[in-house]
Length: 203
Image (cartoon, rainbow, N blue to C red; front, side):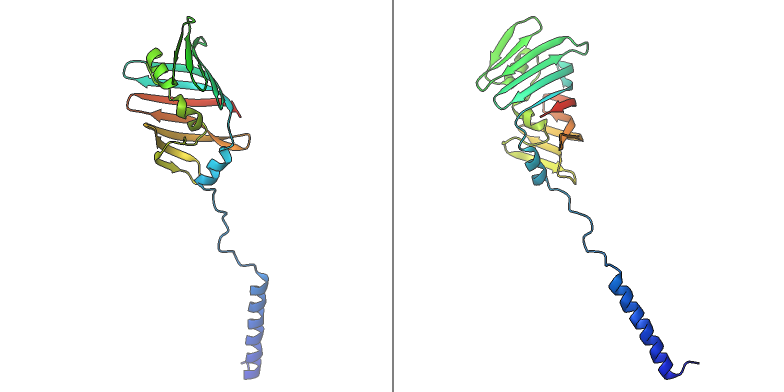
């Protein structure tokens, strides 16, 4: 049986051992997981993209007409050049947009011009291509117009956007030259549904 003094020394040794263990064992910090980038941070990263080129597939559905094929798009601040191709690779139309005029040329070489791409494509192709907003939406960012609603994932990337009469959904993002950009985009309006799958792009 331990005598009192021996017992005191025993407890002192135990106490010193515990204190040393606390001093040498690092405590877990309160926040070990870094915070995810916010939507504002993500949009700031892609705000510098002013021009791009992309190739992909596009499907369009309306009550009367539709389109399924490929597109090749060159975009700059004041100029757009879009070529639409059938599934067999035949060019269906080409669209050139400048600051003041939009011109569409069909497969027969006939040209029609208008002030905006939306009314021009609806008049000639039977469906509306929202080219005014598409340059931003294809990058996963809203236009300067008011936003009715939006959601984003934990990386700050848009998953849904409601703007200018369109409901836009993003289902997939890929890394393009160090920036997270969408490659599957669904756009819906009361009269037309558009699916855009981007297969190659650069900026």
